[in-house]
Length: 105
Image (cartoon, rainbow, N blue to C red; front, side):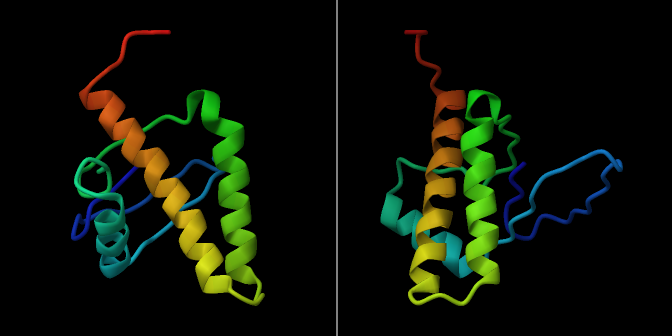
């Protein structure tokens, strides 16, 4: 689930739900979008992107992001930036795929 900036929201989960919530500052999102260019988007509009076949990959990425955030290793900010960038690329690719579906391979 992607919620754009200034979108009023709340979360209500059943007890059996497991997952992650990542909140990014607007300046960070703008910075990452500028690096990726205008062809890659996905964080400025509301969207829901099921993990599907990427479930294990995304879970490991979120776990690594959580571990890095909780630790105080050298170059922590750089690693967090890199991990968030990977997530942004994944979300953006999902948004692009939704707008322009490719034929199955």
